[in-house]
Length: 58
Image (cartoon, rainbow, N blue to C red; front, side):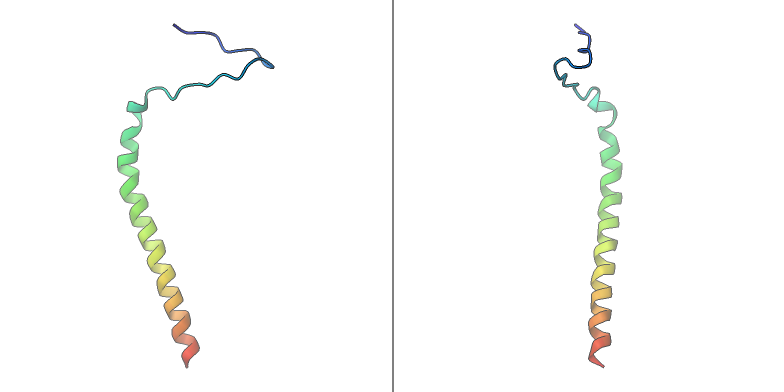
């Protein structure tokens, strides 16, 4: 079932991503955090752009 890895200079071995079921739930926790972080970043960019345009009018 298991085969040894090729020695250096041998053929390229593609290692499978094993046990994806052990870490997929991390994505469920990270997704909302990343979405909120991206929203805050986008909002701060828009606000900074708006402040910059308001300051140049007067």
